[in-house]
Length: 216
Image (cartoon, rainbow, N blue to C red):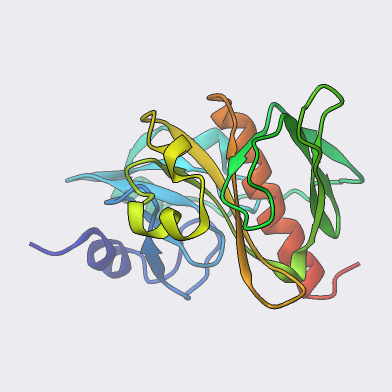
């Protein structure tokens, strides 16, 4: 039996949403797959596909969580892309639970998104104080991960594993390269506000690409 990656590549050599021919890769939520370019994610069934995460094109949210036939996806008319206008956006609640080599204590706070960077700030009521800015050119990853996906060996090396393995839930993991060119990780509890986080991940993907492409 062919894998979902092989099936979608054969059925859709070009992504049905963004028309890219860069191909597909496994989603963090295996066996789902995602487009390498626009980051749309699908669950693949016997006779159709369900869009599980919207792309960074801001044109396909109306298709979310709909199991549509392969024929429907093939006949999908080009979706009109919209350009999000962002000066500053706050995403909360977003509590830091660990992972970073220099920040061992949890913090209560929020993520501040700007056109050129993502910043984590602790709130006034947080016992631990944080104000960490990550330029998009240093950002290496921003994904939802389950405790099952976070292996003991990986997080034992960078800390915070004892917090993570106390509960079966999802976390937002931000990875970036610091000034010493070391890979750092920040793990956030978003308290089940998954729609909020999906929007954040999608916006960051769009803004990062726009920034690195040199589009004003």
